[in-house]
Image 1: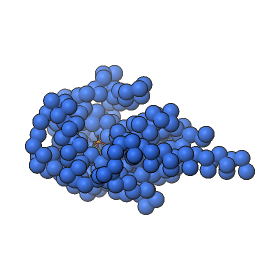
Image 2: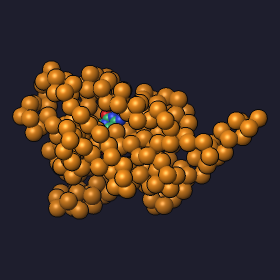
Image 3: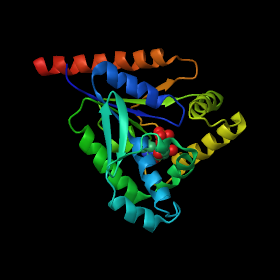
Length: 230
Ligand code: DC
């Protein structure tokens, strides 16, 4: 079947990453976690001692940074040759990533890289601007949403898995701040593409989310095949 490109956007905790990763596995596609790229850049800024608020310094650093995603079963995130897969999930990175990712020049560099990876098709790409900016001609676009209480619950579980226990009110507050920054920034804000299919995951299991996307993906891939045969 033709290898297609699937874009999945949505706010933090909407279920994008888990779903995208599993859909990619099931289709034998590459999973591209674009949030991880912005997180890796943010980690570099923090560990180099620069202030995330210093746009010129962040941009300068980003020009001299190599970020790659190695998808071999589990996705590994490499920063200048170092494995930062776990380090980029810290609270410090999460708090600064919206600011670092709001800088236009940082985005230009990341988007260029994302387009290179996606050029061959056979990818599931998740992020905030994938269907709107990075791949406006993606074969399939989804926009995932969920209630804030459910998103906070998921994030709390994820954090506690890394040994961080935060009160749910704090998690809600942090999610709201990140939503606000990600959706109101000037460059490529988080928003639903006009032709994206919206999936509310509040009451769905991960399996259900995966199945919904797979059924659309099969339909589109089969459609492409038939068109080619005609
Ligand atoms: O998906 P995530 O929560 O790991 O993403 C971390 C941050 O990166 C998110 O708050 C905003 C930014 N991001 C972005 O600006 N554009 C993307 N395509 C993906 C993530």
